[in-house]
Structures are given as C-alpha cells and as structure tokens.
Length: 262
Image 1 (cartoon, one colour):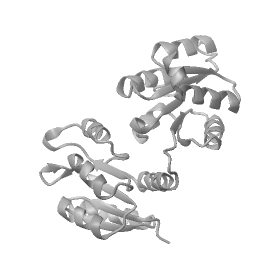
Image 2 (cartoon, one colour; image 1 turned 120 degrees about the horizontal axis):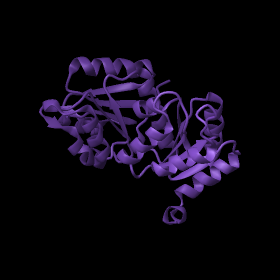
Image 3 (cartoon, helix red, strand yellow; image 1 turned 120 degrees about the vertical axis):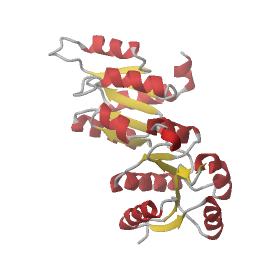
C-alpha cells in the first residue's frame, strides 16, 4: 500500500534516482522532475502528497518559486534539500534561506532514509490535522524522562520530537519549525545552557523551557541551575521532579499571549 506520491525536483539525474529509490523503499510513489517547467506540469496533471525540492536547480534557486508552487498545490507540504550553496555558500546559510522561504521541512544532504521517513510521518499529520499542531522538542539524555514528557505532551495534542542530547537536536531537528524546546540543563556534551544560548540567538522566536534537578557533583543546586538558564535566555523554568500537569500547564502558559506579555 502506497504511503503517497512525492514529487522530486532534482537536476542531478543520479541524485534523483537515489532519492527516488529511498522513497520507493519506504512505500511511496515518486514523480521525478529535472526542471521547474516539468514540475509545474506534473502538479497540474498529478495529485501529490509532498514536494521535495533541491534548492539549486541548474543555475537558479528554486526557493524563490515556492510561492508559485504553493499556488498550484496549496495543500501540499514543501520539503527542500541542499548540500550547500552555489559559489561556495555555506550549508547553514542555504538552510536558513530555505526556512525564510517558509518551507515546511529542510534537509541537509546527504540524508538518511530515517530522515525522509520522519518527514513522511509529519506530512501525514499535516494532512490529517486541519489546524496546525504546535511542535514540541524534548531534549534529555534520560530516555525515561524523554518518554514521560513526550507522552504527556502528545496526550495534550501537541506534535512531539525527541533528542537525547543538544548536539542531536541541533543536527537532526529543524528547530525553526519548533514552537517550544523543553530541555534538561545537565547533559553530556554541549549541555543545556550552551544549547539554550544557541537556540535563543539563532531562533529567537522559539520558546525554551529549562528543566533541572541540579547537579550534585558540580554542587549546583536546582535553583542555581534554573537561574543560570534564565540568564542565557530560557522563557520559563521547571524544577524536577514535576507532574505531567505541571509540565502541560507551563507549556500552555508559555504559548499564551498573556504569559509572553508578562
């Protein structure tokens, strides 16, 4: 049973074939276009569930044509993919351009079948939900805590992504399309404080809830940890342990205009 039809715009025939094979292996039907003119024709003649666009096609930039593509297929999510920019532009700069063009998803090449599968899953949720579900990102190195938080948020109707470290979150999740990041402070590697600083500087519209029970080895109690998180830009703080109700009430409050105006 097909999981839907994906229209691929990719000027490299080798890349297009590889991407098509990945999608077909995941149960999708694929339409492959190597130029914008053919893409427009395919949108006219076929019903598609997802557009997967390479940013640089030939000598042009497909991002500026996203509004035209949306006019032809207003209900079809748009995912853009790139390995960098023409003329040496950095990958992160190109991905930032894609987010500014209001693409629904962004993918850095090379990407894995898992990354595409995640987009397909989210595409189905977009189709099934007339009103956009708020997107929560849960970051904690403890799997049990992640699952408890994710379950509480999912039960409230939020869309939830998970990461076991700040590095994983920054690499794998499109934070530009996240509404609230809920992160532990003390984790191996980068940790929460540095990560919060990065998120708030690069994506200032994304809210961050910092959670912590403190760190005994560092002699850093809960209040000091949460105070440090506030100083680097967290929107709100949540001491551990907490209940599902504590969490969801705080998330609802963070998303409310009244809380943000306080």
